[in-house]
Image 1 (cartoon, rainbow, N blue to C red):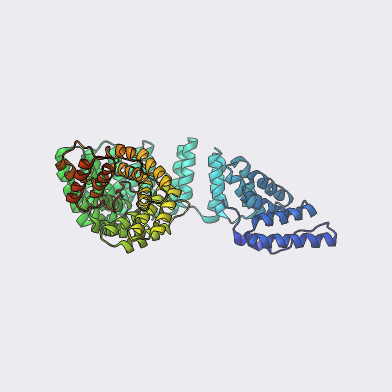
Image 2 (image 1 turned 135 degrees about the vertical axis):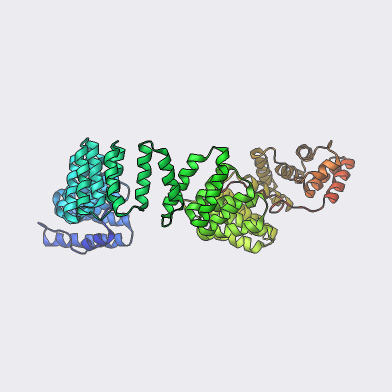
Length: 576
């Protein structure tokens, strides 16, 4: 139960506070401070409002209006015990005001103080006798408190207001079953069926309850009632499958399952349920794989719906079919359900790992349209656009992603977006913006190794803040000690600091002098600029022969690039 609505509270606030037994001057003072408190409350200045209502109570400690407002605000401001105490006191002063009673009930319920809440909610139900929602609250409270008889009585009161319904009858049925009074439970559904003889859901529900209680003969009597009126009823056929399973009639159950798979006018969810049963029955049997595949293909043609396509994808994933077939099934699912998170995520990962940036672009666009708060789509769309030489659009995409950031966003995702944004800014020569993006990246995740590495490298190229660059580059190598790119950056920063001995030590961990030229040229992860760095470091370490060798290899290697500039790695995580 929620605290009283703002509309209802405002209606109660329009009146003057109770001023019984006060001298006229004190009554005017009370009214003045009360109205001032209401104004502050409506302006969302809650602390100031509370102080004004508390001042009202210093004038008249038993003023119910001021007590109500102060108690409500105290509770809202997180002081549950004090707020609840004030709301309890106001109901003691005036237990005929439903706003006061409801506020106390809501406060108690929010603290799971059910024993104390029950009499308060009962009082509210007496004050507002036409509110079935309050009675439903009582039903749940009594059930939670193990007071089954009282819960049944509350349901009786609901039925007096709204009439007997399937919802109330099923709740009563369950309560009688809990009490062990099976025949009384059956009578509840029997009475409902007599009152609604044309509602075929009821005999099916009754029959299923009989099945649950191991009374299949009585269940069949209920199902026969439906069969006489609507023998093709899908719910009836589902219930009969349960009956056949219960009575060990396996072949009849299978026949009913297969008929529901292809019968016309079967609801999609029922058809999907039957397909799932077929898969459960047959999967794990190698000789049945082709039958399942053929069935799923037929069902997709018969019922081109998200449920069937999703079930097909699920089975293909289980069966580990060839990648092209699985990818096409995912695309078929997206064609009928463009917002399907599983299909979007799987396809995005697939196209990224294939370095297929055009399809990555397509899937990320679909992902943003369907789930604009999912930062992963902005991140990978930015990568795809960069690879497609659309850097301005990539920057815009990443900036739009940052506009979605809120308190629920994952720090790692936000950090990664800033990291890529910094790289793109730097490629455009927007150095100050690049460094600002890197600073923001490290605010969200101070151990973002790629950012630490890039930031350090670009500072070293400008021969700026080298001590800070050295600390960042060193930390990146500690986070990923086998990453040759990071080791190269650290070696280069040390070189810029004229620490040639340590620079040589770290560049040797990237490029071993004992490796052959052909091996170094064939290493796709060894870029030309790394070889050039090695040459520079050896030149100032008095080894001209090795320096010339590395410079020559750098020229042969030519210019190459990683996925997004020199230092960026593709991340493998995808947030679903």
